[in-house]
Amino acid sequence: MRTVVIAGGTRGIGGALAARLRAAGDRVIAIGSADANLTSVRQTAELATRLPDRIDVLVLAAGRFNSRRVETAEGFEQTFAIYVLSRYLLAERLRGSLERAATPVVLNLSGTGGIRAGRLHWDDLQLTRGYTLFRATMQGARANDLLGVLFANRDPDTRIRYILYNPLFVDSGLHRHFRQPQRALVGAAAKIFGASVDATAARLADLLAAPPTTPLTALCRGKPVDLSRPEFDRSAADRLDAVLTKLVDGVLGARH
Image (cartoon, rainbow, N blue to C red):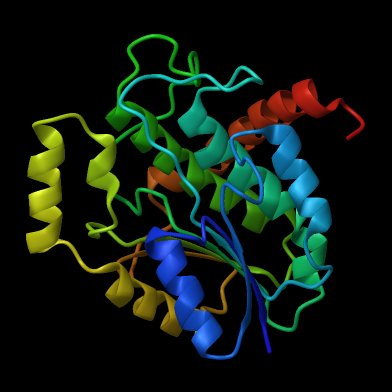
């Protein structure tokens, strides 16, 4: 029986995946807002200490999207805090627990997957100027591509397989975060053209049953994405690592 931790596992794609894996016999720990505030560096770090010492699969699916800029108590833009910082912290803090599993996998439901949209605003990662939901989401997606590169290259001998997966258009309720009339338009389009959360969860469950053997894989709705693309630049990943380390140290202290 595998132990699966799903951050963002109480609703949407993460919730559907949690239900499917439980039905298949896995032990699933679905993390929602009642378990920890993943917009908080402190609470995310504390959560990692409460999770099992052996984890077979870590799924990073938590996100929060706002039409207006929201700043956390720790001073971070909220989308960046949960979409980038929490995923960075959980993967790094749980590396030891993953290494104890037979075939450990990190599945990150994000990343632009090679889509040419969004960029990192290195001079203003907290988007204090010109915030929009789209800019925040696309910056987070691009950052997560680099988190995959960073994790896979941190230890070249690791057995952990890191998968970046972009499910593309899914009827997951994201339209609720838009203002009208965009909310109605995006919601209607999702109903007509988007994949269901159950169909997406089924694809992900199949992927986790037979994960790739390479340290890093990027998939766009199941199709491989070329890791030589600029979205996966190693120097940019190292730069992001330095920035995130400094931000985390600023909250937890340099000896955390």
